Length: 334
Image (cartoon, rainbow, N blue to C red; front, side, top):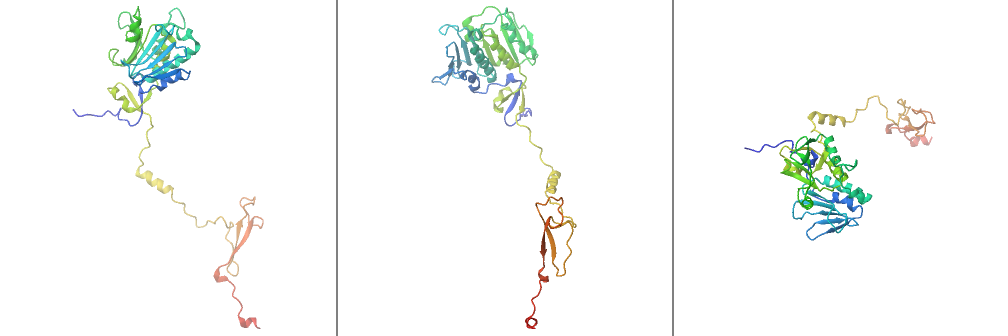
């Protein structure tokens, strides 16, 4: 079977990808690191090219691990005791849209400035501002549907079925939450949770404010800009691509060309027109064939200028054939 191109994807240049949760990563970590580096967090690199940043008190650590042991590109942990085990941990895999990671680090920077009571605040169903369900609300408002996929699991799924958020109830292994996908929260997008295009996990103690910042960004209906070549893996009817550059003007028709040429032709001078430097009427010739013209005085307040001496300067033109002849020598001797 011959290949038939799909006009939806034959677009030159950068594109907008909708829905945004299928846009994929931009391939660089700078936008997501910026909110923390702006607070003065220290940035270090290892010999492999991985990057690490730590809060000044060493109680929050972020690793950007393109050369890590698995596909967990972003790993963020927070500590009650800088020498103890993590209080909570979050992981974004290497295909997660960078904007979602940036939403998390921006919220983390804000919470860190408020102190440990904010960035270490565990979800609590008895608290109005720490109720775990608050993280799901932005998705519900955008039409995501609540469902139970299995016992001990609460899930919300996007209207197109290509993204979801799962919340696991009951006890979990704290170490497994930090190193595997068996975490309290799992956000994903793709064909299914078992074959996701990308995923993100958060452990039990992750503050609700940080989770809500991500779900708000995920549920935003605005498309995300991407390099067109980076969207090939989503060409199976899963996304809509729109050119970022506006369409160019249509090609001119022969009639358009003819009109443009006609508009550049100078208008014909009427036969009765009078040049601007003359008076409003043609001067009468004098006896010797010369003519007296009047040049406009630019300082004259009259509109239009009159031919009075105060408004115009007289100027006489004498043709060569009207030049007076000199008297003959014989006439001069008389």
